[in-house]
Length: 420
Image (cartoon, rainbow, N blue to C red; front, side, top):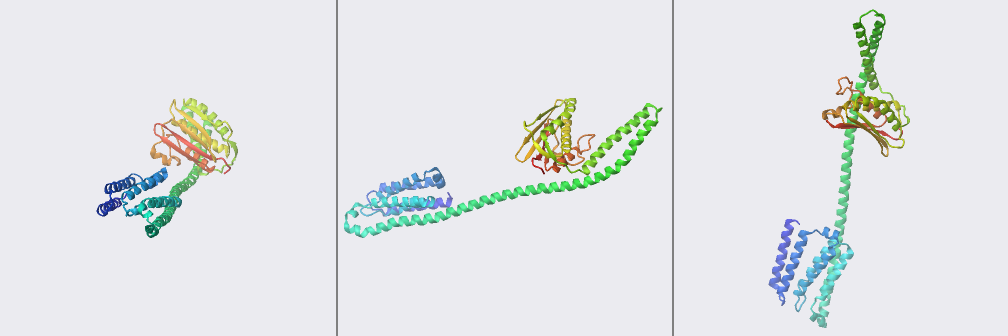
């Protein structure tokens, strides 16, 4: 309860009690004082300990009004002498409480019982005197009618206030929902903008890589073919010469593979999607890497649904994406590590998670892990994850990653079930 309201109520109750002591003329001053004191204490306790909303919700409002009417009737009885009590107006307390927090029917019922108790507590001497009844009856009926009028008027104002409060609550809820939706939209917009900026950077970088790789490829082919011709012509050369020529040829092949990766990243081909069983594709890739896992002493396990999972994908591109992700996971694990694949289906997409127990990814690298040329390997080009991500995006999906240093990483690939 508001502090100022609490002080005002106490002041008014104390003032009424003083008036009772000064102007009371009946024989039961002790009972009247005690009844007034009980009403005041009950009113203050219920107001400070319980809210009317709690009483209505718990179903205690009827009991509360009954106690109120009983205490008010005791006060009226104690202050009634040869004439009716001057405290009949106290019946407005339960009527106002009912009108403020209950519906119209319950307000009328409370007003009815207040009128009945008021009429029953009028001194019998008045009812037995025909002249007094003739003179006082209009006043009694007006008082009872006033009970109903006050209850109905306050109930009308209270109903309007409750309706307005409910409308404001609904508007507040709608405002909160719209605010949450706006916040979510802003986050999605920020993510979309970041994706577009990243795509622009990758597109520019891809064009540059493609041009550079194309310019390198021709002289690289000349070096490789020249080394092969020298190897064929130098039959009588020493062993060292043959080893140097083999190094040239081997490094030329490695550089050619890197150039092919650059070309593939810089000029990605459009996927030629056909309906494929993703579980079969995954089993095929796992079989290809079984020997690699055994040589690395890493346990490679796979959890697949029993039924087929038809998706519209380019099987060659998806296999390459899975190979890149699985090879990274195997490289991240030391001997005795574990790589686990889990394939599940949602309502509109397929979720493939590749978890490893490797060294994990440093937090500062998480934002750039799918950028080209970002790698922690000494001999890596940093294009494996970038190519895998571009393949997933080309199929209408995405790749996300969770990682903890020294605990491992989990890459999750999402692909749509419907044809994109």
